[in-house]
Image (cartoon, rainbow, N blue to C red; front, top):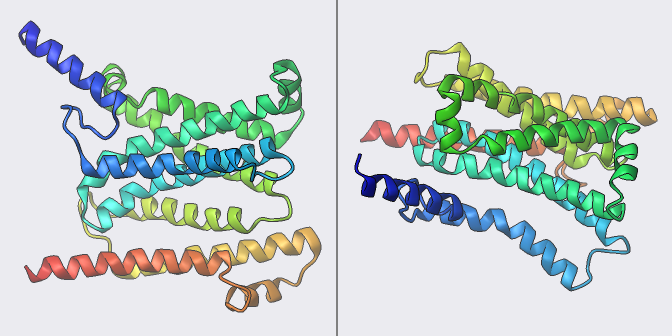
Length: 294
């Protein structure tokens, strides 16, 4: 490789890292540009609310909550890329998986930074509170893991670690996601609607990967298996919510299950999981039918 070619290659990699809407060759990619904008929207929304003084009586607490919430949402979204890519036969989704994961780590880092700001950046005081609180320790462990994954997400780190070691390292996301969810549940206290929904979606995402391992690489997953996965994830979400309220407040578990099957009070987490999983399965079936007709 000539010096000019090597310099151009280094320039392209730097440009790609500074402009996430470009590929490794420095070319503009509309999909990456659109996803970059969407990943930035929550931050801009929070900034707008801050400028409008619309964050309530405890603005820092609201910012801490919202950045943590979006960090976990983007973490789930990054885990959803592989199932969606495979089921919808849209390989280009791979282009945005890494940037979604990095965005999750960035929002999580701001989550911690705002927590320190809430303690007037008296780091020793903040750390004492963290080490004496189970849910804060769990959250910190998940955050450190996400930052490690973000720091090793570059092409350069893939080359240094080697493909197998890099993949092995990044599989810790399957531990970090449940840790982050546990932190979310403990922090949510009484209002566990969204954590329960996220738990159901995470269950489907991990269940899909287990189902994928049963069949040969590249094989189409059987529709009965995908339907069973959707039903099972929804049923576990409903059952988990009923168990939670029964253990916490003695609420009749059967009543909670009946509430999940009714829309009079809006969609409960279990039904939302069922609709999301069924929707993706039906979309995948539609894609398969169209491809078969060609």
